[in-house]
Length: 507
Image (cartoon, rainbow, N blue to C red; front, side, top):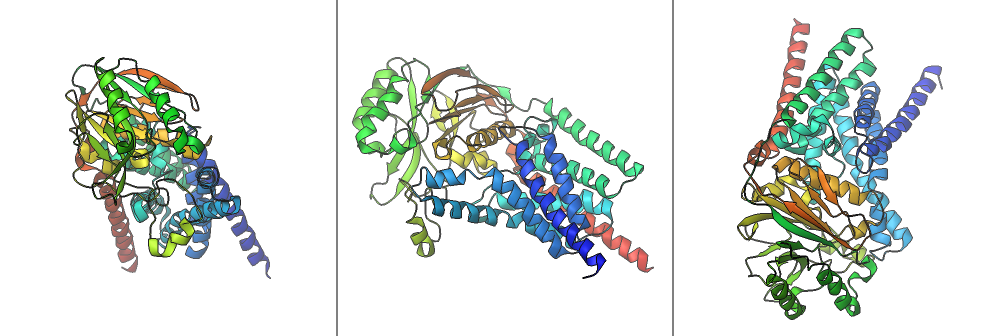
């Protein structure tokens, strides 16, 4: 083996390890850490590594290593869901988590291969092709195989000046701006010239100044009197939640914490861990009793259709009409339904999750109206899909999310989930009331700020006042298409400039 080949192989191994580390370090940009500047540097390093790869195939390996680092650390909590609460043995849980991470890592691997194949002049490559294709990759991740937008880089911008882009083009536009900034860093790492450093610095200043300026705009307005709300965090242990003999005790926790006299009381996802019809008598009597004090109760639970063959994860107004019900549309694969049932039923049998064969809600998605206010509903990780939630806007003037993050134990996942919920408030310019079983229950402002929250793993209730808001952000009107359109235009510009260069070189 020649000295040159040894050197090339050594570089490749170093590049793989650096990419793996860069992916892992990127996780610290997200909740609960929030060190968002780290992501600009780690992505910049990753992009520079791709540019320096000797071939698209080598770049694909580097991209896969980055993905393993990012998702291996960032979503390791899947193991807890499968093993501690899904009943799968440790080996099956570890294997399932590893397969999940390896599948997710394919996306950055494909990204790296494609952009390396388009390698050209570094300025055009870094500032046009790389950010554009990264954005399209993240957009694909929001819908491919039902979607998994977890760790899309825009979420890390929530506490940064780049958050100002979210009400305009959603998290994807924030992702695009952050990725351009990171690409500028990558360009400096590859082209070590003072002119490039100055130009990249100016670009970063422009991007951050734009985000800061947009964040000063008040996109929506208060509309109506404040509503007093009690959000109940029952902290019912996941291993006890679906035990029939403990049903009365579980419901007692919620009823005891709900007598505050607030205008609205919200219980979390599956606070009623059975069909509403099984406990209608008890719940209707309770709802009638506190209604005399002026309170209305929203609760998560399960519904069954009239034929008895379809079951829904739902939230409803206790004692209310059939119209005051929301059924979950975006279900969790394996957690709430079995995808590719004919092929994967045997695999699903290894995991024991109660109520894991649900149907998606049907019909138009409309807010629930209570005392003249319209509450835009979402259940669990539906709040990760802004493009789906926006159909309830602008009619909805308050957002409600009910979740049960007990599935994730004491991991990063509940903090990451809260960060995603806060991004929805920022995108839509609406306050959110987020009520969970074991935490993190929170009142989120229309600017994505956590105004008050309950500590995890505590049985408690928090009382807040929320002011309804009206109006639309640009994101409410156009959704993801502004960011996606911008990425497509950047790609067209890249190819046009590249073709112009090739033509003039021939001449």
